Amino acid sequence: MRMFKLAAPFLRGRNFRKRNLYESYKKGFEEEPSEHMQHKDFFHGYEDVIDVVPELPMRGMLTVCPTPIGNLRDITLRQYHTLKTADILACEDTRVTGLLLNLLSQYNLNDPTEVEFPPKNIPGEEKDEYTFSLSGDFIEHTYQTVKKTKEDKGRGIMISFNSYNQEGRTEKLIKAMKSGLTVALVSDAGTPLISDPGYYLVKECIRAGVSVESLPGPSAVITALVCSGFPTQNFYFQGFLSKTRSEKLEKLEKMKESNCTSVIFESSHRVIDTLLEIEQVFGEFHQVMVARELTKMHEVCYRGMATNVIKDLQDEIKSKGKVFGELTVVVAPHYSQNQKDTVELDSLHLVKTLCTRVRSSEKNITRLIELITGWRKNKIRSYIKASKSDIS
Image (cartoon, rainbow, N blue to C red):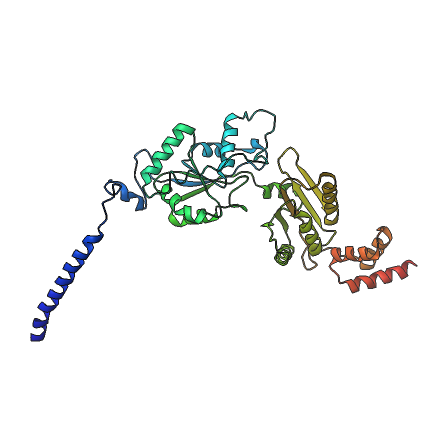
Protein backbone atom coordinates (compact mmCIF):
# COMPACT_ATOMS: atom_id res chain seq x y z
CA MET A 1 0.00 0.00 0.00
CA ARG A 2 2.80 2.38 0.91
CA MET A 3 4.53 1.78 -2.42
CA PHE A 4 1.30 2.57 -4.28
CA LYS A 5 0.87 5.87 -2.41
CA LEU A 6 4.37 6.92 -3.34
CA ALA A 7 3.98 5.93 -6.98
CA ALA A 8 0.63 7.56 -7.61
CA PRO A 9 1.78 11.23 -7.38
CA PHE A 10 4.70 10.42 -9.66
CA LEU A 11 2.37 8.93 -12.32
CA ARG A 12 -0.02 11.84 -12.08
CA GLY A 13 2.83 14.28 -12.56
CA ARG A 14 4.18 12.46 -15.61
CA ASN A 15 0.74 12.42 -17.29
CA PHE A 16 0.29 16.12 -16.53
CA ARG A 17 3.65 16.94 -18.16
CA LYS A 18 2.75 14.84 -21.25
CA ARG A 19 -0.56 16.68 -21.64
CA ASN A 20 1.16 20.07 -21.45
CA LEU A 21 3.69 18.95 -24.05
CA TYR A 22 0.90 17.71 -26.36
CA GLU A 23 -1.09 20.95 -26.03
CA SER A 24 1.95 23.10 -26.81
CA TYR A 25 2.90 20.83 -29.75
CA LYS A 26 -0.63 20.95 -31.20
CA LYS A 27 -0.79 24.75 -31.30
CA GLY A 28 1.62 24.93 -34.23
CA PHE A 29 -0.67 22.74 -36.37
CA GLU A 30 -4.08 24.25 -35.75
CA GLU A 31 -6.18 24.72 -38.91
CA GLU A 32 -8.21 27.82 -39.60
CA PRO A 33 -11.92 27.16 -38.92
CA SER A 34 -13.88 26.26 -42.10
CA GLU A 35 -16.76 28.59 -42.99
CA HIS A 36 -18.81 25.52 -43.94
CA MET A 37 -18.37 23.99 -40.49
CA GLN A 38 -19.99 27.08 -38.97
CA HIS A 39 -23.18 26.29 -40.91
CA LYS A 40 -25.81 24.60 -38.73
CA ASP A 41 -26.57 21.98 -41.42
CA PHE A 42 -23.01 21.00 -42.33
CA PHE A 43 -22.97 17.68 -40.46
CA HIS A 44 -26.41 16.64 -41.70
CA GLY A 45 -24.68 15.11 -44.74
CA TYR A 46 -23.38 12.30 -42.54
CA GLU A 47 -26.69 11.24 -41.03
CA ASP A 48 -28.89 8.42 -42.31
CA VAL A 49 -31.52 10.91 -43.43
CA ILE A 50 -30.36 14.44 -44.26
CA ASP A 51 -33.01 17.06 -43.64
CA VAL A 52 -31.39 20.10 -45.20
CA VAL A 53 -34.28 21.86 -46.90
CA PRO A 54 -37.93 21.65 -45.78
CA GLU A 55 -39.20 21.50 -49.40
CA LEU A 56 -37.54 18.11 -49.97
CA PRO A 57 -39.35 14.84 -49.14
CA MET A 58 -38.03 12.83 -46.20
CA ARG A 59 -36.37 10.24 -48.45
CA GLY A 60 -35.30 10.21 -52.06
CA MET A 61 -35.17 7.17 -54.29
CA LEU A 62 -33.50 5.59 -57.31
CA THR A 63 -35.53 4.97 -60.47
CA VAL A 64 -34.12 2.66 -63.14
CA CYS A 65 -35.46 4.28 -66.30
CA PRO A 66 -35.35 2.46 -69.70
CA THR A 67 -35.15 4.43 -72.96
CA PRO A 68 -36.14 3.52 -76.54
CA ILE A 69 -33.92 1.04 -78.40
CA GLY A 70 -34.87 2.44 -81.80
CA ASN A 71 -38.33 3.95 -82.21
CA LEU A 72 -38.78 7.11 -80.14
CA ARG A 73 -42.51 6.40 -79.79
CA ASP A 74 -41.68 3.47 -77.50
CA ILE A 75 -41.19 5.96 -74.65
CA THR A 76 -43.80 5.55 -71.90
CA LEU A 77 -45.55 8.25 -69.90
CA ARG A 78 -43.83 7.09 -66.70
CA GLN A 79 -40.40 7.18 -68.34
CA TYR A 80 -41.03 10.66 -69.75
CA HIS A 81 -42.23 11.94 -66.37
CA THR A 82 -39.17 10.45 -64.62
CA LEU A 83 -36.73 12.02 -67.08
CA LYS A 84 -38.37 15.43 -66.70
CA THR A 85 -38.77 15.46 -62.91
CA ALA A 86 -35.73 13.60 -61.53
CA ASP A 87 -33.36 15.80 -59.54
CA ILE A 88 -30.27 13.96 -60.83
CA LEU A 89 -29.95 12.05 -64.11
CA ALA A 90 -27.16 9.46 -63.86
CA CYS A 91 -26.45 8.92 -67.57
CA GLU A 92 -24.34 6.39 -69.45
CA ASP A 93 -23.66 9.31 -71.83
CA THR A 94 -25.03 12.78 -70.95
CA ARG A 95 -25.03 13.79 -74.65
CA VAL A 96 -27.43 10.97 -75.53
CA THR A 97 -29.77 11.68 -72.61
CA GLY A 98 -29.68 15.42 -73.33
CA LEU A 99 -30.60 14.77 -76.97
CA LEU A 100 -33.43 12.46 -75.88
CA LEU A 101 -34.88 15.17 -73.61
CA ASN A 102 -34.67 17.72 -76.45
CA LEU A 103 -36.41 15.38 -78.89
CA LEU A 104 -39.17 14.52 -76.44
CA SER A 105 -39.87 18.20 -75.78
CA GLN A 106 -40.09 19.00 -79.53
CA TYR A 107 -41.47 15.80 -81.05
CA ASN A 108 -45.20 15.23 -81.52
CA LEU A 109 -45.71 11.63 -80.43
CA ASN A 110 -48.92 11.43 -82.47
CA ASP A 111 -47.01 12.23 -85.66
CA PRO A 112 -46.87 9.05 -87.79
CA THR A 113 -43.31 9.89 -88.89
CA GLU A 114 -40.93 7.59 -87.02
CA VAL A 115 -37.94 9.08 -85.25
CA GLU A 116 -35.07 6.67 -84.56
CA PHE A 117 -33.14 6.95 -81.32
CA PRO A 118 -30.29 7.14 -80.59
CA PRO A 119 -28.92 8.48 -83.89
CA LYS A 120 -25.76 7.03 -85.44
CA ASN A 121 -23.60 10.03 -84.49
CA ILE A 122 -24.00 12.05 -81.29
CA PRO A 123 -22.70 15.61 -81.81
CA GLY A 124 -21.04 17.76 -79.16
CA GLU A 125 -19.08 17.03 -75.99
CA GLU A 126 -20.29 15.23 -72.90
CA LYS A 127 -21.62 17.67 -70.30
CA ASP A 128 -20.82 16.23 -66.90
CA GLU A 129 -22.35 18.45 -64.18
CA TYR A 130 -20.96 16.29 -61.37
CA THR A 131 -18.16 18.74 -60.50
CA PHE A 132 -20.61 21.60 -60.01
CA SER A 133 -23.08 19.68 -57.86
CA LEU A 134 -21.90 16.49 -56.18
CA SER A 135 -18.13 16.80 -55.81
CA GLY A 136 -18.31 18.37 -52.32
CA ASP A 137 -19.73 17.11 -49.02
CA PHE A 138 -22.03 20.06 -48.51
CA ILE A 139 -25.43 18.66 -49.57
CA GLU A 140 -27.23 22.02 -49.56
CA HIS A 141 -24.97 23.12 -52.42
CA THR A 142 -26.23 20.12 -54.44
CA TYR A 143 -29.84 21.04 -53.71
CA GLN A 144 -29.34 24.66 -54.77
CA THR A 145 -27.63 23.51 -58.00
CA VAL A 146 -30.53 21.15 -58.79
CA LYS A 147 -33.05 23.92 -58.10
CA LYS A 148 -31.26 26.40 -60.37
CA THR A 149 -30.79 23.84 -63.18
CA LYS A 150 -34.49 22.97 -63.14
CA GLU A 151 -35.41 26.66 -63.35
CA ASP A 152 -32.94 27.38 -66.17
CA LYS A 153 -33.11 24.16 -68.24
CA GLY A 154 -36.31 22.44 -67.19
CA ARG A 155 -34.49 19.29 -66.04
CA GLY A 156 -32.33 18.00 -63.20
CA ILE A 157 -28.54 17.95 -63.26
CA MET A 158 -26.95 15.39 -65.60
CA ILE A 159 -23.91 13.47 -64.45
CA SER A 160 -21.87 10.83 -66.25
CA PHE A 161 -22.31 7.38 -64.72
CA ASN A 162 -20.56 4.51 -66.48
CA SER A 163 -18.50 1.39 -65.79
CA TYR A 164 -15.37 3.50 -65.25
CA ASN A 165 -16.64 5.92 -62.59
CA GLN A 166 -19.66 4.18 -61.02
CA GLU A 167 -17.89 3.01 -57.85
CA GLY A 168 -16.51 6.47 -57.09
CA ARG A 169 -19.82 8.26 -57.66
CA THR A 170 -22.21 5.82 -56.00
CA GLU A 171 -21.48 7.04 -52.47
CA LYS A 172 -22.31 10.66 -53.37
CA LEU A 173 -25.50 9.62 -55.18
CA ILE A 174 -26.66 7.60 -52.17
CA LYS A 175 -25.97 10.58 -49.89
CA ALA A 176 -28.02 12.78 -52.24
CA MET A 177 -30.92 10.30 -52.24
CA LYS A 178 -30.84 10.06 -48.45
CA SER A 179 -31.13 13.84 -48.36
CA GLY A 180 -34.40 13.59 -50.28
CA LEU A 181 -33.24 14.01 -53.89
CA THR A 182 -34.45 11.63 -56.61
CA VAL A 183 -32.04 9.95 -59.04
CA ALA A 184 -32.89 8.42 -62.42
CA LEU A 185 -30.45 5.85 -63.83
CA VAL A 186 -30.45 6.08 -67.64
CA SER A 187 -28.55 4.10 -70.28
CA ASP A 188 -28.12 5.16 -73.91
CA ALA A 189 -30.75 2.70 -75.18
CA GLY A 190 -32.82 -0.01 -73.52
CA THR A 191 -33.00 -1.04 -69.89
CA PRO A 192 -30.06 -0.16 -67.59
CA LEU A 193 -28.09 -3.07 -66.05
CA ILE A 194 -28.85 -5.33 -69.07
CA SER A 195 -25.33 -5.33 -70.56
CA ASP A 196 -25.13 -1.72 -69.31
CA PRO A 197 -23.81 -0.06 -66.11
CA GLY A 198 -25.92 0.21 -62.96
CA TYR A 199 -25.73 -3.06 -61.03
CA TYR A 200 -23.25 -1.65 -58.50
CA LEU A 201 -25.47 1.38 -57.80
CA VAL A 202 -28.64 -0.70 -57.34
CA LYS A 203 -26.85 -3.16 -55.04
CA GLU A 204 -25.40 -0.36 -52.86
CA CYS A 205 -28.75 1.47 -52.70
CA ILE A 206 -30.47 -1.66 -51.39
CA ARG A 207 -27.67 -2.16 -48.87
CA ALA A 208 -28.00 1.46 -47.71
CA GLY A 209 -31.79 1.26 -47.36
CA VAL A 210 -32.56 3.56 -50.31
CA SER A 211 -35.78 2.78 -52.20
CA VAL A 212 -35.31 1.42 -55.73
CA GLU A 213 -37.98 1.21 -58.43
CA SER A 214 -37.58 -0.19 -61.94
CA LEU A 215 -39.78 1.04 -64.76
CA PRO A 216 -40.82 -1.47 -67.44
CA GLY A 217 -39.68 -0.61 -70.92
CA PRO A 218 -37.78 -1.47 -74.09
CA SER A 219 -35.31 -4.35 -74.10
CA ALA A 220 -33.71 -5.91 -77.17
CA VAL A 221 -33.53 -9.23 -75.30
CA ILE A 222 -37.28 -9.65 -74.85
CA THR A 223 -38.15 -8.08 -78.21
CA ALA A 224 -35.91 -10.50 -80.13
CA LEU A 225 -36.93 -13.51 -78.03
CA VAL A 226 -40.65 -12.97 -78.60
CA CYS A 227 -40.37 -12.57 -82.38
CA SER A 228 -37.91 -15.46 -82.84
CA GLY A 229 -40.54 -18.19 -82.92
CA PHE A 230 -38.48 -20.29 -80.47
CA PRO A 231 -39.78 -21.51 -77.07
CA THR A 232 -40.13 -18.71 -74.51
CA GLN A 233 -41.04 -20.61 -71.31
CA ASN A 234 -37.48 -20.06 -70.13
CA PHE A 235 -34.40 -18.64 -71.81
CA TYR A 236 -30.67 -18.17 -71.32
CA PHE A 237 -29.29 -14.63 -71.74
CA GLN A 238 -25.54 -14.29 -72.15
CA GLY A 239 -25.08 -10.65 -73.23
CA PHE A 240 -21.91 -10.08 -75.24
CA LEU A 241 -19.70 -13.14 -75.62
CA SER A 242 -16.00 -12.97 -74.84
CA LYS A 243 -13.62 -11.93 -77.63
CA THR A 244 -11.35 -14.84 -76.69
CA ARG A 245 -12.31 -17.84 -78.81
CA SER A 246 -11.79 -20.46 -76.08
CA GLU A 247 -13.98 -18.53 -73.62
CA LYS A 248 -16.59 -17.95 -76.32
CA LEU A 249 -16.80 -21.67 -77.13
CA GLU A 250 -17.08 -22.44 -73.41
CA LYS A 251 -20.08 -20.10 -73.11
CA LEU A 252 -21.68 -21.60 -76.22
CA GLU A 253 -21.35 -25.06 -74.70
CA LYS A 254 -23.17 -23.81 -71.58
CA MET A 255 -25.90 -22.38 -73.81
CA LYS A 256 -26.21 -25.77 -75.49
CA GLU A 257 -26.41 -27.60 -72.15
CA SER A 258 -29.15 -25.24 -70.90
CA ASN A 259 -31.62 -26.89 -73.32
CA CYS A 260 -33.51 -23.61 -73.67
CA THR A 261 -33.62 -20.68 -76.08
CA SER A 262 -30.51 -18.48 -75.81
CA VAL A 263 -30.10 -14.76 -76.53
CA ILE A 264 -26.81 -12.92 -77.09
CA PHE A 265 -25.71 -9.49 -78.28
CA GLU A 266 -23.10 -9.22 -81.00
CA SER A 267 -21.32 -6.48 -82.95
CA SER A 268 -21.69 -6.29 -86.71
CA HIS A 269 -18.01 -6.99 -87.42
CA ARG A 270 -17.95 -10.17 -85.30
CA VAL A 271 -21.36 -11.68 -86.05
CA ILE A 272 -20.14 -13.98 -88.86
CA ASP A 273 -17.40 -15.47 -86.68
CA THR A 274 -19.86 -15.98 -83.82
CA LEU A 275 -22.37 -17.74 -86.11
CA LEU A 276 -19.61 -20.02 -87.41
CA GLU A 277 -18.80 -20.95 -83.80
CA ILE A 278 -22.50 -21.51 -83.06
CA GLU A 279 -22.57 -23.76 -86.11
CA GLN A 280 -19.55 -25.64 -84.74
CA VAL A 281 -21.11 -26.19 -81.29
CA PHE A 282 -24.80 -26.65 -82.19
CA GLY A 283 -24.47 -27.93 -85.76
CA GLU A 284 -24.91 -26.34 -89.18
CA PHE A 285 -28.59 -27.32 -89.36
CA HIS A 286 -29.43 -25.71 -86.02
CA GLN A 287 -32.04 -22.93 -86.12
CA VAL A 288 -31.02 -19.35 -85.30
CA MET A 289 -32.37 -15.83 -85.77
CA VAL A 290 -30.34 -12.65 -86.16
CA ALA A 291 -32.38 -9.48 -85.51
CA ARG A 292 -30.93 -6.27 -86.93
CA GLU A 293 -32.03 -2.73 -86.01
CA LEU A 294 -34.95 -3.83 -83.81
CA THR A 295 -37.93 -1.40 -83.70
CA LYS A 296 -36.27 0.87 -86.30
CA MET A 297 -37.44 1.64 -89.82
CA HIS A 298 -34.95 -0.78 -91.39
CA GLU A 299 -35.57 -3.66 -88.98
CA VAL A 300 -34.90 -7.09 -90.48
CA CYS A 301 -34.71 -10.62 -89.06
CA TYR A 302 -32.65 -13.38 -90.65
CA ARG A 303 -34.15 -16.78 -89.78
CA GLY A 304 -33.22 -20.34 -90.60
CA MET A 305 -30.43 -22.86 -90.25
CA ALA A 306 -27.14 -21.40 -89.07
CA THR A 307 -25.45 -22.17 -92.38
CA ASN A 308 -28.18 -20.32 -94.33
CA VAL A 309 -28.18 -17.26 -92.04
CA ILE A 310 -24.40 -17.03 -92.44
CA LYS A 311 -24.85 -17.06 -96.22
CA ASP A 312 -27.51 -14.32 -96.05
CA LEU A 313 -25.24 -12.07 -93.98
CA GLN A 314 -22.28 -12.75 -96.25
CA ASP A 315 -24.43 -11.71 -99.25
CA GLU A 316 -25.29 -8.46 -97.43
CA ILE A 317 -21.60 -7.79 -96.83
CA LYS A 318 -20.89 -8.33 -100.54
CA SER A 319 -23.63 -5.90 -101.60
CA LYS A 320 -23.25 -3.21 -98.88
CA GLY A 321 -19.69 -3.64 -97.67
CA LYS A 322 -20.61 -4.66 -94.11
CA VAL A 323 -23.48 -5.58 -91.83
CA PHE A 324 -25.01 -2.39 -90.45
CA GLY A 325 -26.81 -1.78 -87.16
CA GLU A 326 -27.31 -3.31 -83.72
CA LEU A 327 -27.59 -7.11 -83.70
CA THR A 328 -29.32 -9.56 -81.37
CA VAL A 329 -28.80 -13.29 -81.95
CA VAL A 330 -31.37 -15.86 -80.77
CA VAL A 331 -30.42 -19.55 -80.78
CA ALA A 332 -33.03 -22.31 -80.66
CA PRO A 333 -32.82 -24.85 -77.82
CA HIS A 334 -30.63 -27.90 -78.26
CA TYR A 335 -32.63 -31.02 -77.42
CA SER A 336 -30.54 -33.95 -76.25
CA GLN A 337 -31.58 -37.57 -76.62
CA ASN A 338 -31.88 -37.86 -72.83
CA GLN A 339 -34.79 -35.42 -72.58
CA LYS A 340 -38.27 -36.62 -71.70
CA ASP A 341 -40.00 -35.23 -74.81
CA THR A 342 -38.67 -37.82 -77.26
CA VAL A 343 -40.25 -39.45 -80.29
CA GLU A 344 -39.89 -43.14 -81.01
CA LEU A 345 -38.67 -43.72 -84.55
CA ASP A 346 -38.17 -46.73 -86.78
CA SER A 347 -34.42 -46.23 -87.12
CA LEU A 348 -33.93 -47.98 -90.45
CA HIS A 349 -37.03 -46.31 -91.93
CA LEU A 350 -35.72 -42.87 -90.92
CA VAL A 351 -32.34 -43.51 -92.54
CA LYS A 352 -33.93 -44.94 -95.70
CA THR A 353 -36.22 -41.89 -96.02
CA LEU A 354 -33.40 -39.40 -95.65
CA CYS A 355 -31.10 -41.27 -98.03
CA THR A 356 -33.77 -41.41 -100.74
CA ARG A 357 -35.47 -38.05 -100.23
CA VAL A 358 -32.60 -35.71 -99.34
CA ARG A 359 -30.35 -34.74 -102.22
CA SER A 360 -27.06 -34.31 -100.47
CA SER A 361 -23.77 -36.05 -99.77
CA GLU A 362 -23.54 -38.97 -97.36
CA LYS A 363 -21.51 -36.74 -95.03
CA ASN A 364 -24.33 -34.16 -94.82
CA ILE A 365 -26.97 -36.85 -94.32
CA THR A 366 -24.89 -38.40 -91.55
CA ARG A 367 -24.59 -35.03 -89.85
CA LEU A 368 -28.35 -34.38 -90.19
CA ILE A 369 -29.24 -37.76 -88.63
CA GLU A 370 -26.74 -37.09 -85.84
CA LEU A 371 -28.45 -33.78 -85.02
CA ILE A 372 -31.94 -35.31 -85.13
CA THR A 373 -31.24 -38.44 -83.11
CA GLY A 374 -28.05 -37.84 -81.14
CA TRP A 375 -26.65 -41.19 -82.35
CA ARG A 376 -22.93 -41.77 -82.77
CA LYS A 377 -21.52 -41.58 -86.31
CA ASN A 378 -20.51 -45.26 -86.37
CA LYS A 379 -24.08 -46.28 -85.62
CA ILE A 380 -25.42 -43.95 -88.32
CA ARG A 381 -22.97 -45.27 -90.92
CA SER A 382 -24.03 -48.83 -90.18
CA TYR A 383 -27.69 -47.86 -90.67
CA ILE A 384 -26.88 -46.08 -93.94
CA LYS A 385 -24.97 -49.13 -95.14
CA ALA A 386 -27.90 -51.39 -94.20
CA SER A 387 -30.41 -49.07 -95.89
CA LYS A 388 -28.39 -48.99 -99.11
CA SER A 389 -28.20 -52.77 -99.29
CA ASP A 390 -31.94 -52.97 -98.55
CA ILE A 391 -32.71 -50.40 -101.31
CA SER A 392 -30.58 -52.23 -103.87
